[in-house]
Image: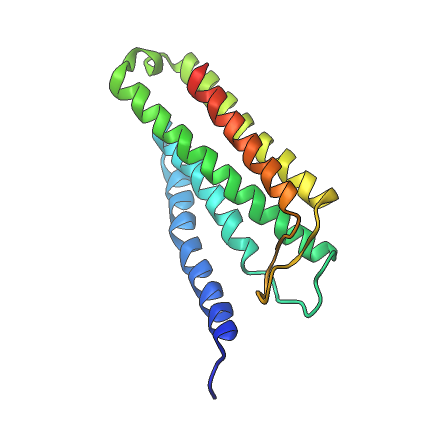
Length: 175
């Protein structure tokens, strides 16, 4: 039996999504087994959660005509949320590494670390959840071209998404 290009894409995407979830789960298990959590472990733990959520969105079953269905909208929500959140977490990890190397005084006090991590967690999950909710509630979602998975078909919403992310990163860099 010979598979078409689309069937190969479907199969390989599912396999690699599952493979991508495994290291994230291992990191989460290690995180909870440790008695002391470091600041960097907490950042990487949250990045792993975001990546797992994004990969889970690729494991949804293929629906013949998913356009506008709740399953399709939820797949778009998870994909958009996980992807945006992982992007924000990656940026925050880079900024924290930069702060650590340039001026280690900021992260020396436990109370400061807790305030920073709580505000980072809030913004890293809150902003993507708002953006993804807009897609879920108002976005034109469905199959894009001949793909088997759902995504945003309305390019205006993608543009808004990009603008919001650019504004967020600009605020982080200049505040």
